[in-house]
Image (cartoon, rainbow, N blue to C red):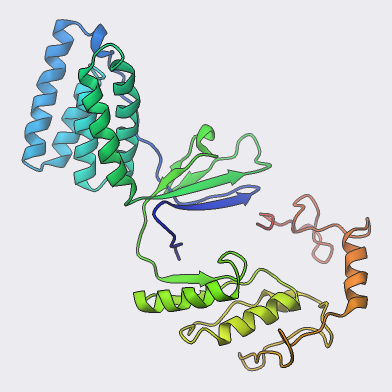
Length: 311
């Protein structure tokens, strides 16, 4: 399942330890700066550059990329890197291309302070990077309470620690199902609009649950009934609760179906006594939330600890 959003897509995750799916940046070249290159280095780099350009024109992306990287390994030229970014882009490696374009912009902008010709290189890279960016998704992963030896992987690749709180490239894919959610999507009306939008796009819709109490569960049921294209079974984490704060107790599906509560508004009434009871319990020292506190064991299953806290 994948998320669908606007022009620059991002997903923010907060977890004690997370393994996600993403693409990391490519390795930088070790060549000398253009101004520090010897005539021999310039010639050798140019030879690789010209072969790479010729391979590019022949659409031999693998050879083009290899030769351009060889050139950059000798002289770290923004112009050679721009051609590398283009080869990566046209080969379909958009994530790596986006990263290389960023390096071109940084390097060319610095060199343009003394050599005006690099201004055009920076401008070209900026424009082309914007076009590539529109085809990418960006994943923002926030990891809290991670042990020193924690490893974060996206798309099977290790993400350096200094990139854990910055947008990381994630190649978008086909959207199979979009999860409706009263909280994430901004209320009842927005979820109904989402149902209409997904139907027009030929995308299935599901509905997410977050262990809500009866108030939220009732709102989900009413909203789902107003979404005619919601054909997948909706989530119901409310079933895992032992009790609820609404009069009459939990709203329980029967035979895989659940009817919207009848009555004014959401059709439910808050049990004020239970609300006071559970509010006092939640704010006292008598309870320790083992879901939010990984250090707390499951009292009903000795020796069991949650692997990840709630999001």
